[in-house]
Image 1 (cartoon, rainbow over the protein chains, first blue to last red):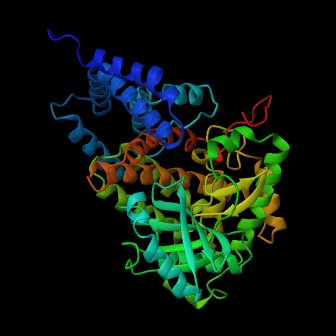
Image 2: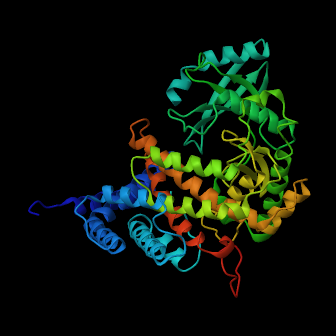
Image 3: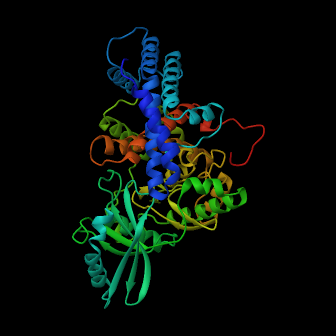
Length: 133
Length: 355
């Protein structure tokens, strides 16, 4: 990318300004709203950083699950997976279902790494965690 | 809406005057109360012939969610709960037409206390938390004494509980997923899993009671560590009482205090004991745990629906948008908890309080 600052640097600067300069001066509903903005910007920042990688990881995981890669977009692939699950194509207790669960756990964990790493870490340690909203 | 409501004070005063036949009514808008993703709640002081009444005016948010009742129905539910001795705010006046302030509303007594769930779960020590869980069990048992046979006529709008409640809930979940724009593989799997487990937990006792259907930490008021009110009856209906017990104990409503399994505030034992002491039936822990998973699923889907209210352009709200992200946490919980035998974590060797 030629342009500087890029999207990531702009979001970082916006977030730092919000958290360090603005949030400490606010109270009540204004503080609540600013904290929500900070959270939204922070998730968006993580999303930009990891989007390509996590999409590729999900594709690879789906290819392993179905035994073959596909050129369809992720939304279509997810829709197909949801349809197959509802049609009971993964029989409970079978190796197929185990593979499915591995896929679901992996992709959900990848999303949580973007939206709430703390929750994921605490759940993986077997403890509860605060919901972020 | 603050400006809208502020401009309608005279109309509001006229309405109260008409309802009370008072000589003089002065209304003072104190401010918006929290917890309003679906509802808008306003603290309102009403001076009626020289006596000040502290009240809450409750109106629908710009876009409600399909499952919640309108103001007239909620008013009837509050009356029924109040009559059953539940610590619900006393319902005072209903304006069902929208003619006075532009949307239907009702006014209730304003109870003291805080409903903030995050502050509450962190502030309570173990003993006070168990005492509160016990109190909540007692209140829930009182509500569950209301049955279709004993209910006031006011509640005739409530549809009968479906014969096969679990199957009906599961069918509803799938219907809700069909209406969401994105496919939800995790939730599809969770629905299958619960459908397969359902026969073990289906009860043929036919016990149907008035259920709150959103009875959880965040929807009751606490003052000086004691229960001071039960709120938010907008989802209430005829159901299996275990749906309420499970909703209260579900992990998604413990606000980070996973070890305090009753609402993040206390122990299951204290909550169950309160329920039984309040006249509720013996609490079967296995049933509660099944319904906790049903609760996680229901909440996951509701969170996605809340986000769609924003994303679909019906109501701009960052709070609603962020609620959509919470679904991921509950999906991850479902992936772990639905695979545990009896949905029960293996006992830990050392057990800390409320961690």
